[in-house]
Length: 217
Image 1 (cartoon, rainbow, N blue to C red):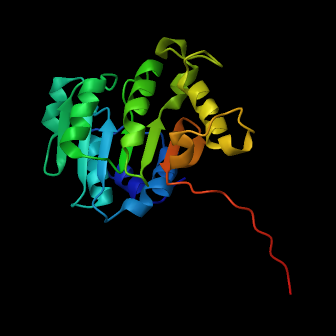
Image 2: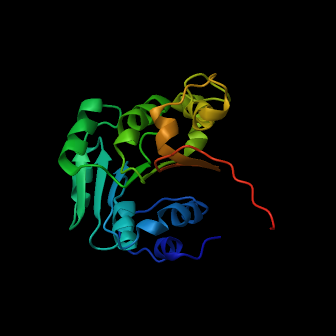
């Protein structure tokens, strides 16, 4: 179990409501640590009780900007210094475009929104390639990919998990002898990390891959 800042913050939370699986904190710390103290722009889809917006501001530092997106107008009450809340649907490309136009390229996107397959895919399709070139896109509660009520199911067509499985081939496209075309995703994605209920995409420009042999003289 994590003993890092975020886990301690969660356990000692005396502020706004937070709801997280314990094992998420290790994942957050592993992929977000490098942004601490560097004033990142963080977009979180899904505001809930506002607690995670406040947690991110404490974790990343007072110079970061946190933007929460939600369809519920009541979530505006969770705005604070350094924390904005914008009302709209994560599946609406026009709304997402207004967010990008207003704030610029995010360093981190966290999808903790509706967890519906079509919504998760719509947000990813619109936001991923607008991330900072070394940014992180994290989708949580992906166990919903196996739940029919969210549009999921084991190996179900349209499941976000099945989409991610295809992305594993796409990231390895240079080795498929042309069966999978090299894409913008291939050229701009460093890694895909899959955990229980969390998927993390890390961006970084990918040059030509080379293999090297070294040996003793």
